[in-house]
Length: 112
Length: 113
Image (cartoon, rainbow over all chains, first blue to last red; front, top):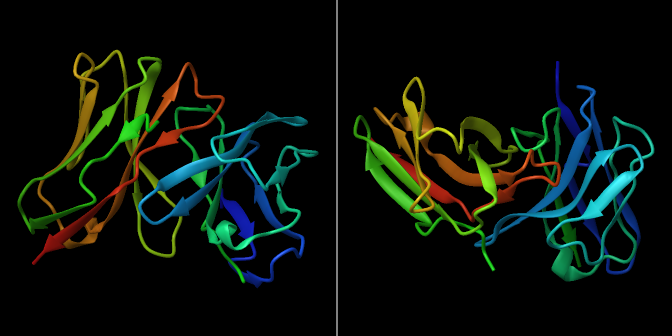
């Protein structure tokens, strides 16, 4: 089944403890993105990648890192999480770029 | 600066009637527009899209209209069904969208029985 898989689905962590949210797609898509969803703010892009080793900042990149060493994987790294990074995170991938993305099921992160 | 705006946070419609969700954009470079539907605890799923060279696209009960001069698009759902209750996001991309999609804040559609 063609899908975008994120792990974990739920995560509670403490301020300052480094964490990684994994994202993997099995559709051979070149384009991948990370979004966060917050009440009243909709979906905001954190980082995106156009291909292996090609990444760039989205609208809200502060406090996040990404890497794209393989085509299928696009992990989101929080080096020192803070409570304002408590959010619902979505990874997405696309074959065609802006003509449609497939989203993962989301990761609900709580930073205390 | 919000480039994609959905000014109605919520909308309540009676089952069987038409639901109209609206979206405005400010960036003239946007040339492709999409609607996504999202249920709680799930990721957004693609619903329908339209290119800027068109003014209408239809898929079953869903129709998207684009008015480029007004920088406005709308999603029509006819007839509305209980399963349509969800949050609907309007999104836009420019020049192939290699840098991803720009989303609005979403409209929560509630279909009343």
